[in-house]
Image (cartoon, rainbow, N blue to C red):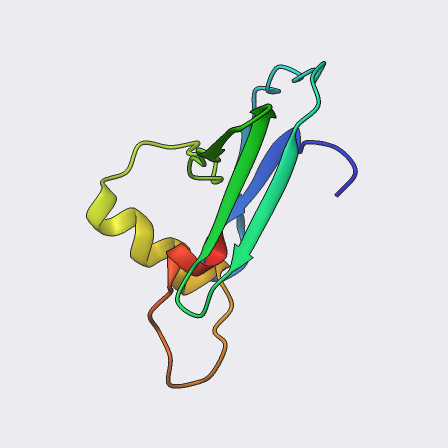
Length: 102
């Protein structure tokens, strides 16, 4: 994807169009500093550390990378995301190890 999407095309389970959700463009982030980044690809999870200034190393704070465009409860949101938008690695595995995604 070369640009942030401007809208989400919505359809029902039969493929019939039911609407369009217009998305607000996020503000552009400008980076004017230089960091050193270290990535630890562990067996159970991946850790990312940054060094902004000499001799100060800290974990990189990561926030969820999904954009919530409609109001939904957490108990229904995550199962829906996993069911419809996150591909399974195998037919018997339904759980997603989120710590390994970062």
